[in-house]
Amino acid sequence: AQSVTQLGSHVSVSEGALVLLRCNYSSSVPPYLFWYVQYPNQGLQLLLKYTTGATLVKGINGFEAEFKKSETSFHLTKPSAHMSDAAEYFCAVILQPGSARQLTFGSGTQLTVLP
Amino acid sequence: DTGVSQDPRHKITKRGQNVTFRCDPISEHNRLYWYRQTLGQGPEFLTYFQNEAQLEKSRLLSDRFSAERPKGSFSTLEIQRTEQGDSAMYLCASSLGQGAYNEQFFGPGTRLTVL
Image (cartoon, rainbow over all chains, first blue to last red; front, side, top):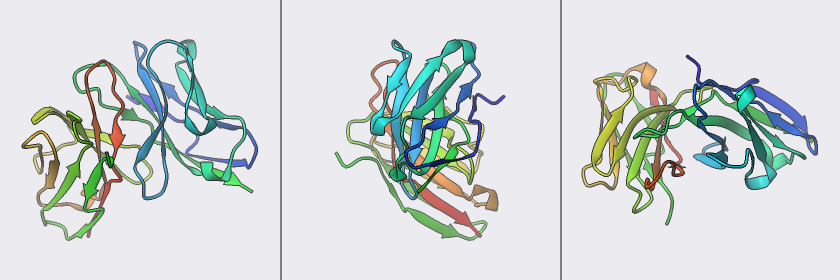
């Protein structure tokens, strides 16, 4: 069963436009939710996370995401895209905070920013 | 603190050969994870160490794979009798696990190509 679904393997936006990357999860209990960014030939970098508390979370580089339990979603947004935002973005969850707490990732969304 | 390092960054091998990868986590991080990322997919969990103990292994980790963390510091991942399907990026991550969630910091990965 797919635990994390990212709609759109490729998204293109113009510089200055809104960025919206979609993520839905399937879990019977609220998971911990994350967005990571991966630049070419680099490791994954954490953008933001939701564990508990406020459902709108702000991350680095102007990104934010909102946890919507009723929609089982955790979409990533940025009001104005910059050329440097071009990268691959991964949504991830920790389904149950058990002993390992390993991340389960979506298949990723490649973001292209057009001049 | 220089982050998580992995060696080598790239490895090309012939089918049937054995390969070994090394991961040096952030010092004092007691948790260490190995993930595998194939082209166009998100990383998939392989195995997890807490200190020197290997506490969890994914079903992806066949008998040809073995991982160690002998002194609770660096870790090695060995693949015996490599197959073309083993071609992937192997990512290591570490965290300081003292609660329900602790951020995993990722290394740059080792890209394996099996000819």
